[in-house]
Image (cartoon, rainbow, N blue to C red; front, side, top):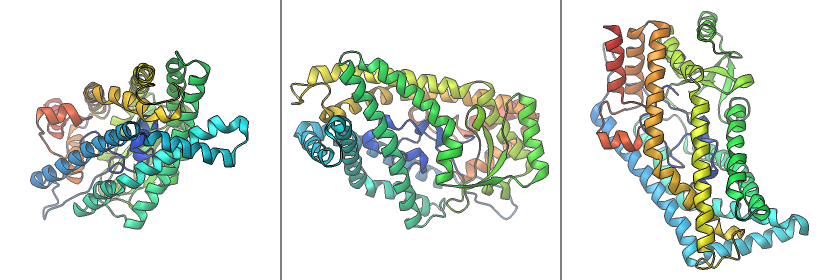
Length: 424
């Protein structure tokens, strides 16, 4: 995506598909790497200029970061508490009873795993709903970033929960099947399989997942459509068409993307961007998105995610073997140990977060440069960045520690400065 002010790590504060899996099943949310949309809300002044309200932006971003950290802490406490109190075994027993009612004997091991994931996800969803509502709905409304009603927000959360349950339940089934086959080496097979799942979900997202939340139609501005398709062709990125992305019913934000892989890759431009941005600005935004595909950033990111999954699963394997007795598990393959598995895998992801963000910022700087080289229009780039920053209430120059911990994109001040240097 062209713009994000900080890493979107919390469950409910993320946009619908960005929150497709619950915090309790965090590392199963392979869909997170593909669909988080970054939106923007504009404030205009009498002369039509778009400016950043830094005080308001600082407050908004600080609150979003705080809720992100609280959400992360809550998920860790929930998972650790379930194991420490023995309630995870109680959930497993309940899952076994549920599976016994709905599945034949030969299917009950797998059915028990899915029922456990269902119960764990419901517990996390219910317990974290108030925090999610505060971050994902209340703050967005308070800062005039959302067009959704409370009912609409809850409906999207229900859809996201369902998608997360299918993805998370399927991933858990795969993991515990691998554990049953090879209790010592399951982490390698499961990690490789989930890496393939990431690729698959990324591929189907624009044609299967995103339409569950947003409307799409062919872009009906002929001149702009021709211009964007020619831009992609000039850059060597094959696309299947250009579409208008209906964000306006949910948000006052604007966005554009080149979504999908191979046969599903398509240009998406939000209705909110089409309404307020010039064709030059939209072109330079799409040039940035095209750069990620030309540079192979999507594949590099998925490769990095796959490495994190393998490392997380390896650590989880060691933890499960070491704590089977102290955690009162029946064995490594006891689904009551799933919270331990999640904590271990999640710890690797959190620890490597700054590295992932640094890599992402490097990708974004390179994509910005590509967009400037391709369009030769730094004026449009700068004006688009200023609009997006004002709309998204971005901090222009956050502290170094905030950049290091939260920013997947360079701060807006750095991006504008680079474009000004290109212009000079």
